[in-house]
Image 1 (spheres, rainbow over the protein chains, first blue to last red):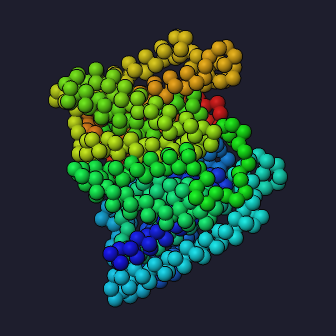
Image 2 (cartoon, rainbow over the protein chains, first blue to last red):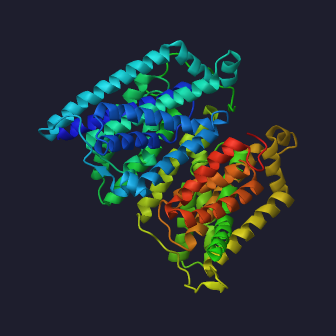
Image 3 (cartoon, each protein chain N blue to C red):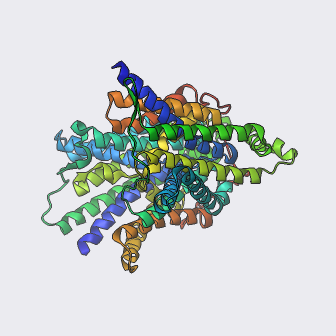
Length: 304
Length: 287
C-alpha cells in the first residue's frame, strides 16, 4: 500500500508537468491543445529509444525529449497559427491520433503495440518502495523547477503579453506584440514540457506502449487544469494532485457499487471524468485557485 | 495493377459517399452553432448502436433501423447540446469544443456500459459479391452507397426547396439579417442540432452495416469526418460531400501503398495540407 501510494504520487508529478504544459497554452495564451497525449508520447518514445537502444545517458535523453516535444509543437503550429482557433483544436487532436498510429504500426522503429520495455532506470533499485521513493523525490524536484520557471514567466512582461493575446489578439497585435511568434513559442515550450513528462514517465515505469497515450489522458489534464484554476501555474499543479485523488476515489467507488462488471466499473469511471469536466466548466470555471487578476469581460460569444 | 487501382477508386467512391453523411451533419452543426462539435465520433457510435438495437434485437429491416439510428443520435445530440454545450456558449467556442470532447467520453461510456466492448454485427442476409469484369462490389456496399446517396438528395431538396431549409441557410449565412426577416436563430440552431446529430448517427450505422460495430466505431472515423469538412470548407454542405469523396478515394488509394492502419492518417495529412494552402477549403467563405 505504501509503495502504491508513493507510485501514485509520482504519477501525480507527471500529471502536474502535463498540467503545467496545458496551462501555459490554454490558461496563458488561450490556445487549445487537444493532442497533449501525442506530445507526451513523443517525449516518452524519444527518451526510451535513445536511452535503451542508443545507450544515451538519461539526462541527455530527457533533454532530447524536451527537444523533440518542442519540434513537434512547432511543426503542428506552423500551418495553423494564423487561422481560427478551431483549426488548432482539430489539428492537435489529429496529431495525437497519428502519433499513436505510428507508434503502433512502425514496428521496426517503436516495437509496435508490444511497446518498449526495460527502459533504463535513473538509479539502481534495491526494492520497489525505495525506487519509487527516489523517483518521487526526483519528479517532485522537476515539478518544482518547472513550476518556478513558469511562474516567473507568468509574472514577466512576456507572460503579460501572452495573456494579452489570450484576451484579445487584435489589441495585442496593435500594441506591437508579435502575436504569431509568441503563440508559436509558447506552444513549443508547452509541448517540450509535455515531452519531458513523457520521458520521465517512461523512465519511472521502464515501459512505454501506444496504449498508454490514449486521448483520455488529454481529457484528464483538461480536468486537472480546470479544477485547479486556469491561468495559474499553482492551480495547474494543485489540480493535477486533485485529479489523482479523484481518479483513486472513483476507483474505490466503482469497486464498491454492487452487481456491476469490471467493464461497467471502468466505463463509469471514464464517464465520471467527462461529467466532472462538464460540471466544472459550467459551475466553477475559475477552479480552486482563480486567477488573481480577473480576465477581461468577454463581449458575448468571442470569435476571432 | 490497373484493376487494383480501379477497385480502390470504386471502393473509395462508395466509402466516400457514406462518409459524406456524417460530414454533412458535422458541417451543418458548425454552420449554425459556430463551434466544432467534437462529440461527432461518439454520436456516430450512438447512432450505430441505436440502429443495431432496432435491427438485431427488434428485428427491424436495415432501412427502418436507419431511422432508429437517426433518432438515437438526434436525441443524444440535443441532450448534449442543451445540458452541456449551450450553457457554455458565453465562455467561447473553444470551451464548448472541450466540453463536447468531455461529452463524447460520457456518451461512449454509456454505450460501453450497456453493450460492452464486444464487436456486434447487424442482422443482414449474406450475399455474394457482384462482379463487373475484374471489379467486385458487395451488394451491401452498393445498398449503403444508394442509401447514402438518397439521404444526400433528401438533404439537398430540404435545404433548397423548403421554407425551413431556406431559413436554416439564411441563419448560417447571416444570423442578424435572418432575424430581421422573422427567423428565430435559436429554433434553427435546435433544428441543426437534431438533423446534424441524426445524420452523424445514420452515418455511424452505415459505416458499421457491412462490418461490425463497437464503442469506438465512431471515433475511428472522426478524423476522416473532420478532414472532409475542412477540405470542403467548414460550414459548407456541398463542400463536405466533395471533401468526403476525395477523402474516401485517398484513403482507399493509401491502402494500396501503406499499411491499412494508416487510412485515418490520410485525414490528418489532408487537413494539414488544406490549412497550409487554402484554409477556407474548397467552398468555404471564411478562414
